[in-house]
Amino acid sequence: MTAAERARNRAGGRLLRQAVAGQRRLVAVGAVLAVGHQAGEALVPVLIGTIVDEAVATGSGAALIRWLLVLAVVFAGLSACYRFAARAGERAAEQAAHDLRRRLARRVVAPAGGAETGRLPGELVNVASADAARVGAVNMAVTAGAAAFAALATTAVVLLQMSVPLGLVVLLGAPPVLLLAQVLGRPLQRRSETEQENAGHAAGVAADLVAGIRVLKGIGAEGTALARYRRISRSSLRATIRAADAQAGHDGALVAVSGVFIAAVALVGARLALRGDITVGDLIAAVGLALFLLGPLSIVTWVNGQLAQARGSAVRVAEVLDAPPAVPPATREPDRPVRGELVLQDVADGPLRVPRLRIAPGEFVGVVALDPAAGTALVRALAREADPAAGTVRLDDRPLTELEPAAVRAVIGTAQHDSVLFDDTVRDTVAGPGEAPADRVRLTAVLAGTTVDELVRTLPDGLDTRVGDRGRALSGGQRQRLVLARALAAEPPVLVLHDPTTAVDAVTEAHIADRLRALRAGRTTVLVTTSPALLAVADRVVVLSGDADPVTGTHAALVRDDARYAAAVLA
Image 1 (cartoon, rainbow, N blue to C red):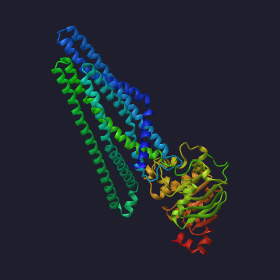
Image 2: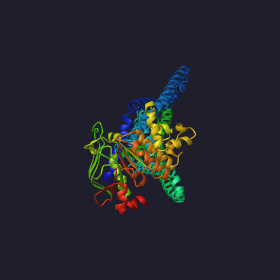
Image 3: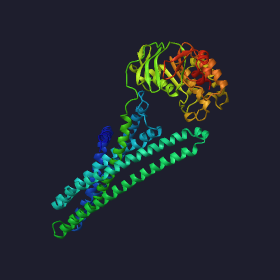
Image 4: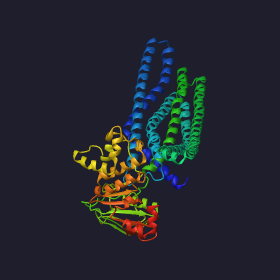
């Protein structure tokens, strides 16, 4: 095992301990009740043996009635213990899984980001559902395991009182059986972890396939996408079958070993009875206890399998929870009021190169990145979704790296062309829930400026029409206009728009360009785009070429004097 694998296993083990510790009261109550149930189960064959010796063999009716009443009380007690132990264990398992899901959700949506790096959304959903459930189930396994060990201990004590050899068979034979269970669980843990990884990847690919089905149909790539999913799905199926094989082998081997162990207990008891070392009632009790041991040993088998699967899932959950943040945390807030001055100094991040760029407060600036990846990197840096590899980005003389990411995004709003819409009404999508009457004039202006008002007139319920999951009830252009309206309605001091009209027709785009400046009057606006209509209304345009200092000028002057710019925006 490599050092990395050991570290991952330690993180998974720590998470399992936390899952149990967080529900320790319920686990303790469940364990005590489960121990009571198993102790009662172990007493049943002992009581039957006692009834045979003291009532049946002697012909005493009073003793028979007395011991039958005792047996009834024991049955009532063990039944009640089982019911409430199961309730406590299941509740602990569900609450632990729920707490894990809440922790995962907080980590995934944390302003610092990082949890989603290298993972498809479907994979994260699988971790928060199946893996969290398996980790939570460790509480039920702990409860059942405590009961199984109590049953083995009770059986050993009872048999020692009957006969030292019988008790020694249990005391000396149980540890090797339990050790073997631990060894047999290791392959199951590895295969279970692989199974969950493949299942999560398949779920992620399926989610992406469904989300992009329109695009796939548009370019005729359905066959290729389906073939890719079929290949990944088959890989997941093979991993699931291997995990099932490991589970079957694990359970079968332990059942066989348990059978040999129980047979040994029964044979030793029979020999002792034949020699007269124990009574007939003791023999009945010994055989009954040997058969009873099937239950605790099967529980041990189940518990070991659950722990193996939980360890594999805990590793995956821990990887998400412990994922390094995309940007280092900070605690400072931007200065108030926010003036909106942006300064980029010696910024370098992949294709993005900005030796020096200042955007004045309230300025409306267009940015054209000749390499589209540089534009994406610029938007991510301004939103503090990813700090640049080198250089500094400042807001009102404060480096963004010193400011808390959520605070940065509260004052620097960003809207990208592929932003996600939630399944909500048009009104709440744009204005947010609880629109105040004073905001209605502003909302009306935003809807008109982005032509969303025209869209609303065509919808069955107007502003109260739901847009569907990810805005699937709308076309691409309609979604973009709604995303733009949402960004404008928020009125952040600084707004960064990234290709906001790529799916909008030319007439609508010209209308939006005419109204955009007025809607952002007095506030800093950075427009990362190659749209001539939008760039034409900017105070100035900055051209990022990647291998030279940014070129600055008006749209008209750059079209006339810069061939690379003209080719980028007029092609």
